[in-house]
Image 1 (tube, helix red, strand yellow):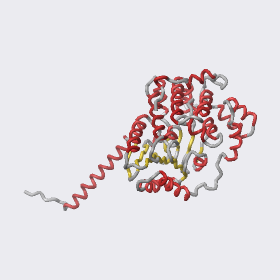
Image 2: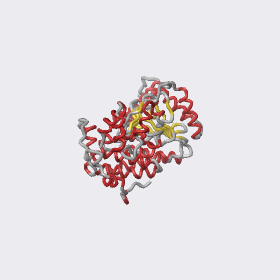
Image 3: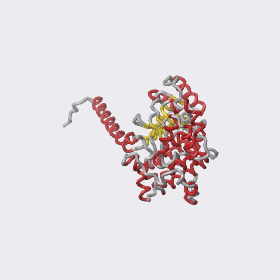
Length: 385
C-alpha cells in the first residue's frame, strides 16, 4: 500500500524550511543569552558585540578572555581590515567592569581580584597598540571598563545617547584602564577635573572634550556599520573619511556650547596644583558657586582614592600606555588590599546608603608612605605587557 501524501512536495519543502528557520531562531535566541560577547566577521570587519544588556554590558573576565584572542587573530588576519566594537540593548556601550564579582573575590582572597585587572589591562594595551583601524561605537553609558574598551582605539563614535564618566573615586578606586594615560592628555586640566569629581559628560560634549573622535546620530549607527563593513580593503584614512562624512552631516546640538566652556578658566587654574590638598584650598579660596559645588563633590570621595588618582595622572602624563597600565595594576592591587574599595562598593552599590566611612577619613591622614606603598613594584607579580 502506498501512503498518499496529503501535501504536494513544494508545500512540504516550505514547511520543512519554516521548521528549520524557527529552530534556528530559537537557537540564536538561546545562544544570545549564553554568549555574553558575540564575535563575527562581516565584510571587511571583525565585529565585537558586548551582549549583557540587562547588566548594561558590564565587562567580566569571561568576556575579556573571549575578546582578547579574537582581537589578536583579526589583527593578524590579512582578510580583516578593521575592528568594530559595540554594545547591545540600546542603553549602554559598556557601563564598566563587573565590580560586584571583583568585590566578592577580593573579600574572599580569590584569584579574580588579580586576574580580572591583569587581563583587562592586557586587553586595553592590545586595543591601544592594535595595527588595524579600531572603531568603538560608544552609544549609551560608557564608564570605567567601557572607557578602556574604546578610548585607546583609533576611532570613538559618540551619539546623543552617550554618557561618559570615570566615577571611581566615589567607590574607593581610581580611574584605571589607562586613565592615567588619556586623562592628563586632554586639553588643560579637564582630565584632572573629570577624574577627581567623576563629572558626567553627555552627547556631543564627549567629543568636544576630546574623548570621542566623531559624533553621529544614534539611529544612523546601523547605516554607518553597514557602510564600514562594505568598504573594500580600507586603510585607516578610508575609515576616517567615512566617519567624517557621517560626523559632518550630524546636526544634533551642533550650535550648543561645550558644557564646561564657561568654567574652563577656573578648572584650569584651580586644578593646576602640586597636591590634592592644594586643589581643595584653591576651591575654598575661590568660594564661588562652581568652586563650592566641586568642593562638596570631592569631599564625598575616598581621600586615599583622590590622592592616588592625583599622583596617577601626574606621573602618567609623561609615561607611555604600557608603563601607565603597569602602574595602574599596582594601584588596583593596593585597592584590593585596602579598606575603601569594599566600603565604597557597599555604600554605593550594595546598601545604597551613600554614606561610606572612609579610612583614613581625611586627605592629611593619607601619608606619603601610604601612597608610596600603593605605587610600589609587585616584583614577579607586576603586570607584564
